Image 1 (cartoon, rainbow, N blue to C red):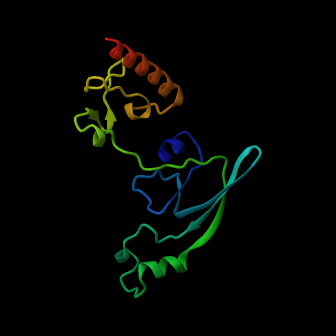
Image 2 (cartoon, rainbow, N blue to C red; image 1 turned 60 degrees about the vertical axis):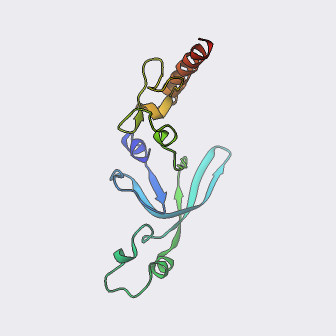
Image 3 (cartoon, rainbow, N blue to C red; image 1 turned 90 degrees about the horizontal axis):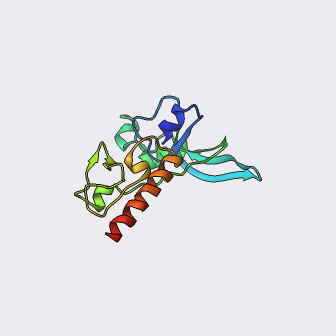
Length: 157
């Protein structure tokens, strides 16, 4: 999601205890955690974070000659920061569809569907971001409507 936002020209600040590999080089990365989100009547204006440059690293990565534990090093390096923003996206871990339905067909992590949003499992339909790009609300709504009509038709047969 962060890479997509960077691709369309948004300034992206990625805040996480563990910074994933593969983040776009245009993304400003902050190892740490979100403390607060502030705003006014028009929306979000800033976030306050607790940055710790060593979060997400293994203890062996702190330094070969360092006697300090990772926890001690993190405490010394922590600093609060405020970032001016126009919006906030909070990501949470998802559940892979195949963990719920092991026989569900996927391609590159996306659920395979036909034009009526049917999957390879009879009576199971999918729509939206789990079926592929573009990750847009209009696409998700249209596919959702198609999936509902297909599901109703399936139930009435």
